Length: 402
Picture 1 (cartoon, rainbow, N blue to C red):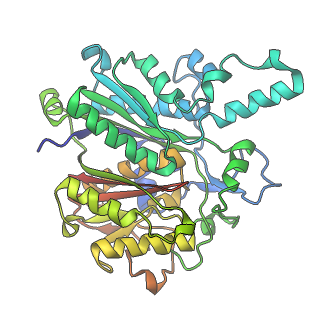
Picture 2: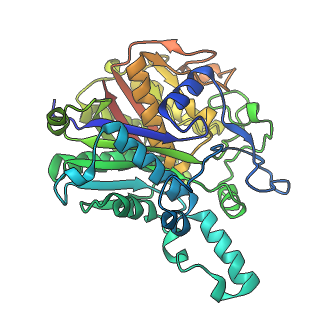
């Protein structure tokens, strides 16, 4: 009963720039993965990505914010503003130090940094923007949100790649339990530029299939890696008592969380995913049978998919819970992906419907998963578990309640 609640949420994603647009795209299986058009990708092995179409920062926020920030921060600012509006929350109406800001980040302001490096090498140091020193910084979004909304409570950033968005919500949960009345939390990423794509290619996990409809197929027999994407989501987390005092609409509750770290591959030790899921359930005070859907990480790398399927089966039993990977429509958004999955899970709770994994058609029998395919599945969702695995070994799980 004392679990912190989510009162506001917003998305800037390849599937839409509003909750309604995103949810309708998810239900329709309408993909935001398309040929890269932000630059010429002809010389790269990866030529498709999840892109946010028609996103424009200029005119939606003060021009100085646009001039001083990278695209990933601009998207975070847009989503934070929309999430506050959705929560009907004005930080200025709360005590001076009552609002926290916690975001996730992976590579920071990659595109801004690339442009400034080009100016440096083409023209010299006097051409480099003075904002380079802050716009690339992985904490830039937390800082700029705090500046724009005048928040003076705790502010921070978590760098755990895909898992970071879940870990940020967990940190916000602790903050609103202990010292603040609200937290602006989430993550965005925007590394679809030559420098950013080159860095991502070093993981060896990106799909080089260049037909958008076949490029990213989690848990599929033909899975060949994941597709990168941009965007993310922001949420407002409050103590339940504070939300009730304000008469706020509650999207859901943050019941449990756990984080882990996978051992190095050469040790032969198992992934931390099973233990992390079990600890998240313990933290939430529920059992595996109480979970109505699992939003899986879905790397679409065969070895990683097999590990995740095995861990889900060990916790929930073979085919014991509906599983879905809606990020197949957006690509993996890195620091933005965890938050977007949380929003999608909360929408599934609201609408009583489990989205399908649109791109996947053939699941190996050895996975023994009840992966939702072909079309959305009407299903009462009281509790949802969201999983994320970040590059380098990060593992996180969040349990949401209605």
